[in-house]
Length: 184
Image (tube, rainbow, N blue to C red; front, side):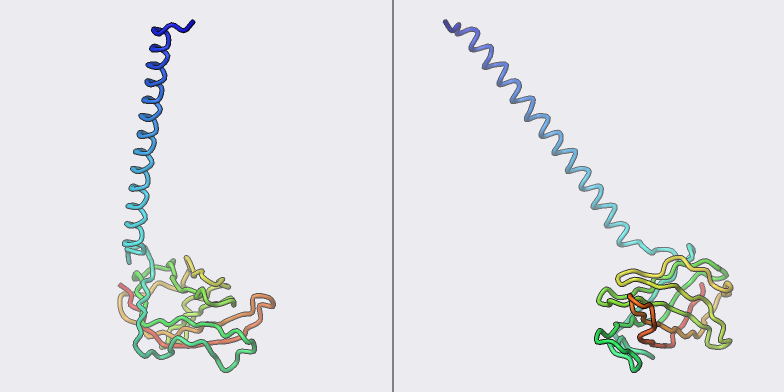
């Protein structure tokens, strides 16, 4: 029949297995919790510091709700579609002095269904500093070469923002505005 000693040994082995399984689960949960905390900390640091450095050639764009040379708008006189593009607004741009490669953070707002392009022109000389290609909605212009590095100082500039049909890539609207480029 059943030996009580044998049953007791099996019960002890089963209890030890359960205890070991629980220990492994606690360890795995602890590792997952630590990894989650590290990931959250890294994302928080990136969100707080990105973009953080003028020396790296990034452009910091200051946006405001104050009246601008061209306000954010959803309509333009020469738009031929029912969907009116939302044009971003810019007050000032800070770049690194004498750099010819910069990162642009000029965003095509996510509300848009159209493509956009940006052209930055120095007001005093009429020189096109840079011109982007097509930018999809929710995306921004990344690294761009500019025609020349600007010495330290402030420069009046003009931006031309063009909206394009995503199907035909024909221009459906344009906005222009004045802003200041600060080279540090």
